[in-house]
Image (cartoon, rainbow, N blue to C red; front, side):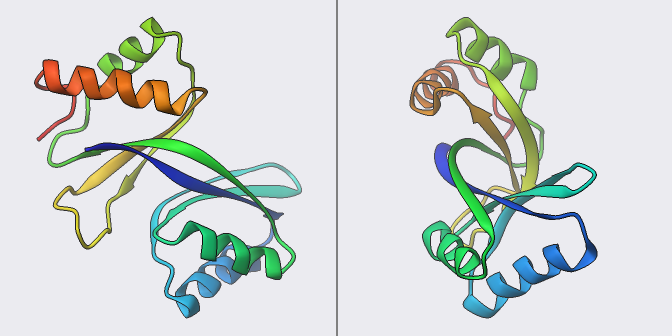
Length: 145
């Protein structure tokens, strides 16, 4: 399954307690982390989360004084095999859609039979969704099953 989701980018100091504080906030409030990646610099870290309750999560973190930016990302779910990244990148490039960054995550949603998903930040999420849905229905093998 391919869909657009909200991703939260949380900007915090680069120190040991910050990630723990974010995760504890989510845990106490019943927010489940579906996807996660972190990018650091000398002073700060950008923690990117795909969660099951993005609005609540964003509000909770902002109440603690954290800077939170939400973005729309594309997620491609898959089972046993990784999706064909070259086919995805080629299809998006042909449609003049840029992939800013991407990462893999385990899929922890209760209603999903898929084991993991690819998260992609693209410059045109709706167009990318249409392009990949057409590709998925016409080309077996782009997304592993």
